[in-house]
Length: 306
Image (cartoon, rainbow, N blue to C red):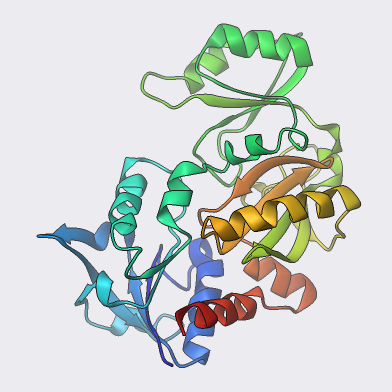
């Protein structure tokens, strides 16, 4: 049965939304109707969630379409895929989508995205996480750094390797830490530095609670940041027994929480992030292995909405 779909994201067909574009293109292959919606074009209008949308037919064709006004409750499926940062605008859209999720299948579940930020979610699995501190207190960050000698700090709600810095107990940069904790900013995440980053930061990609593939991002020479946006390169990889154990624990939790798309980041067999916002993996897995996780995703969605 053809479905009416809204994709809330940055512009489809661009680098910033390449994985979301894979999702939208597979929907078109299956005969579904796709409406492209920019995050700023969602409004709560007298009890209805209304969006300014363009029909998406592939490539840049949406640019040639007139905007139409759609009621998001009339959709069968809504993909919420804006890139972080997770700021109040981002959260407000989730709050509004949460009000209609009993009538429309929203992927991923808005309440789960709100409740399980990607750098906090791993704390549910303490046996798999590196030593971690989340704090705005400079003294706590200094003490944590003294205990672990070598530490990576990063913004709590950013993505793509933005704002990551490395500090040591021997040369603790208090000025840098205070600058990152400017008034009104969220706490910082501090984690013990994992030397295995030189072998890469592994992304294990889940669709519907099952592992759909994995790849490793290796930092460029002289760097400790493996994110693709920061110059890291992607390579094939295998999943270790410890990672398989984690997948068995995590998979059912994803299913029960309405999380259809998830990517976990693993360094040295330690989970540093569990990404359920606009998690990437579709493009990389297709490039490296020739497989298309979006097929499994739409098989699952069509079964859910039948």
